[in-house]
Amino acid sequence: MRGSIRYEGESVYIEEVGPEHTTVRYELKKVLHSRQTPYQRVEVADSYDYGRMLILDGCVNVCERDEANYHEMIAHVPSLMHPHPASVLVVGGGDGGTVRELLKHDCIRRIDLAEIDAEVIAACKRYFPSLASSFDDPRVHVYNEDGVAFVQRAHPSKYSMIIIDSSDPVGPAEGLFTREFYQFCHRILDDNGIVVAQSESPYVYPGVLKQVYDLFKEIFAEVYPYHISVPTYPSGQIYMMMGMKRAVQTEPFTDSRTQNIFSTYGDRLHYLTHDILKGIFYLSGDVKKILNA
Figure 1: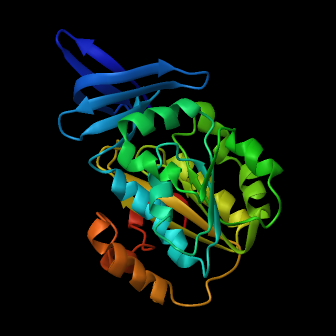
Figure 2: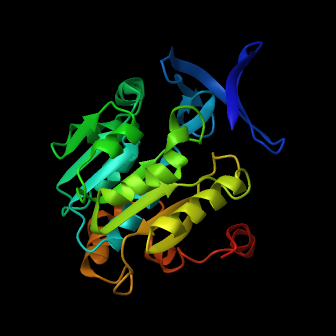
Figure 3: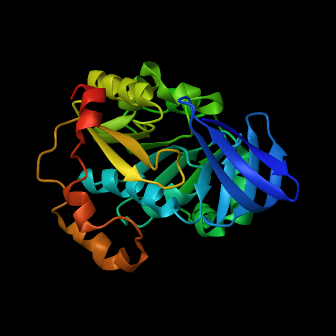
């Protein structure tokens, strides 16, 4: 997607244009923050219908109304699939939402976050404290580094999980969609390691979804695509790709940790439910055709 904030008289809009001649447009109340960094333009705006938005290079990255849909699913699904996640690397994720959800798992003792653009974190600490306050937890260690370089130099078998919380495969996120990067991720995972990567929409970027799926099939023992409804993304749907270093040994989501998450945080989970988990890995017919699965 490519986009920009546009001013028309007294009105202001964010407009995103997709590769298939699709335009998504939101009217904004006010632009609160705008700064060009060496990597991208970082903006924050108040919208009428979706609350406050984080906008990167003219495209909506996070908004208050549906951020939980994305962050709960990218964080809790792999955390509940891994038998005992202790250390996690988040690549990207400078808004803090993924880290916030990971911190709900007491077994996770350390979270490293590699976010190339320090301005994203600074803007979110100021304008999205409900997300970015997660960086204040002592288990969290923030590195303002390129995610690819960070993964390349990390020690083998260091992490239980890697969460690739990236933007679209352009600009600073382009290197996070390559075979070499996924191979480095495989190397630094423990024997039960799991990686989850934001893999785009089958309706906006079907080629990217297919590319990530094929690369994961080459590198990981088992691969599970799953989808999330995120209304402010252009198609309203986005897929995650989950790769595992070894096959699942037991029926997923039936252990006490899954029950504990819902009993402890059920009233603070906005999207994730037991019913969602029951059908998470079922694919629609059109997506099966894209993946040839």
